[in-house]
Image 1 (cartoon, rainbow over the protein chains, first blue to last red):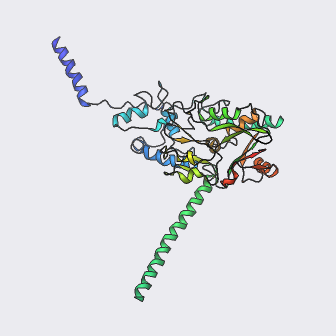
Image 2: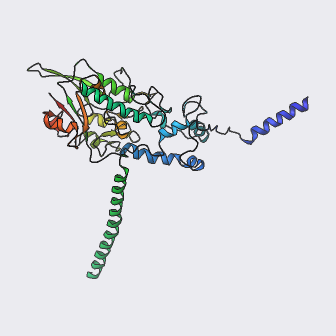
Image 3: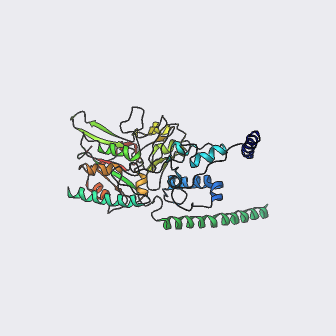
Length: 150
Length: 244
């Protein structure tokens, strides 16, 4: 019995001894099969890609390019929390707390993909992907016609 | 001496050649890129603007303000310290007593004083005439708020939650009307306020491209007498008012 306990204890300390800090839990993306870049490349360079694109988007109005933060959030939001940065195991937070790098993206940016109530204007039914935009365009046309009828 | 001067002049000429040639190529590349982009990016040929017909705007209606709040994730009933991008303002001519209710928001000046005073380059004008704050550069100094004659900008004092995915906003930055830039970039043709006004049946806000002679706003501006707020300042605003 004592031997068994000893053996178990040794096993436990051995497992913990390999890594003193727990490795980040990287949840697989809920949506999509392939990231916009290779995994290793994205892990090293995502910050540069995001920084580059934010300039294009904010200052030149280029939207819908590959490396947008919104698109990251769409795929990588946690299954339980629905966010990339709420729970300690969420996609962004788990790595960043391991690397001790503070992220302030989500002080302004939504850390959750747009839900049905907030995706677009509340008048507009939203759909996954770009369908909401198309439908919204239709609605605008419809509204225009109603306005003209009045 | 003369020989040296000649050598220097030659050197300068050579240098100029080197500098100009890649410069020209860069411009060509940039132009080609902007043409290829098409819908991607602000179009420098466009100037987005609004015409607000105050004779149609109803004093008891605030559909535009409510639509702006819900579109951009602002507080539905703001506290005095909360950000407001758009307000209904009552104006009254003292001598005649005639009053009008007008929505006032960022006027998207062609020569914006907020851009002039911004120490970090956060306040900027897009090529399509929309004046925005780049929150990545904003340090929250609020010079632009003081420079703006329309009081169109607000400061976010407290941490925010539940922002819209298309409208990031947060504590410590100045913000204001974006002319629903996320909608325009997605190819839509109306701002939330203009859409809400049409839905309320007033059609007091006409939104469109001032540079396109065939757009509704262009012909309405041609037909209707309209003016800019504080026209005397010569800021050349993109928002015009009829009936004040």
